[in-house]
Length: 303
Figure 1: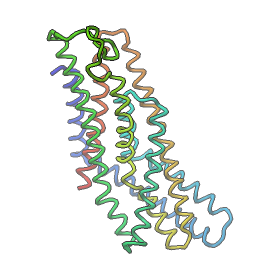
Figure 2 (figure 1 turned 135 degrees about the horizontal axis):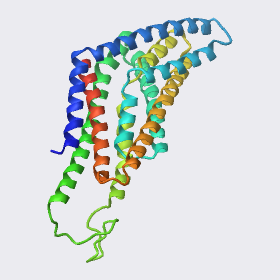
Figure 3 (figure 1 turned 90 degrees about the vertical axis):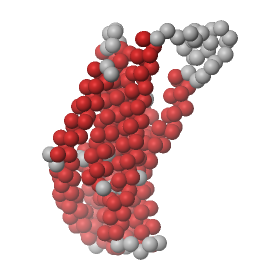
Figure 4 (figure 1 turned 60 degrees about the horizontal axis):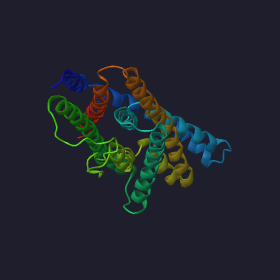
């Protein structure tokens, strides 16, 4: 196996062992829990002011929710890891990745709203039970889905390395083909071109990314939705959940754009080098392993 494959694999395995053995995932979770408690205290005070008729309370609530969404995305979280890893691993336009980031974040607000109102109106669940459902079932499923995307990126990169290795060591008896896959001998296409494959998979990739992020609602959104329902100001809670989603989207979009830019910069810097053909799969391999390592650690901790 080439060194360019061995090194990222070794680094990823070492990072996972270090984070797990040193309690890194527990420390991240404890930090996030402390900040979440502070946020909930501020939200509770603002909601009491809103119910009492304070004219500026709604604006303050939206501001707090948006700010929490930004903080929540900057802190430990899986959405930006998945968006960033995908942006590094695949050649995707930054506008498309930004749209995926926005829809994914809004999807979390939709999931939170559906969970809360299905819970209170249909299943008569308590706040503790709904938060427990999100953490005990939705979170592990989300981590597993994200880990699967990491595996897919990793396998895809390894296949590229294998194809390049086979092309370099074996002679092939195929007829010459053009860039679009058209055979120069018979004039027919014996398979889809790389561009056609990429276009065909873009929608599927987008749906997988959106589902993997949106399936787990933010606990802050659950808190706001539940308490506003109990206080009789449900619409304010729904608006607050979407304000959080927009705050989260600001960060995930930034991460996605940075990842796409970094990928382009790295590939461009090796444009005239003999290792150019190794750079693209190497970046995809590192991105896939990054997503897989973090998702695996979060999944192991969740279960």
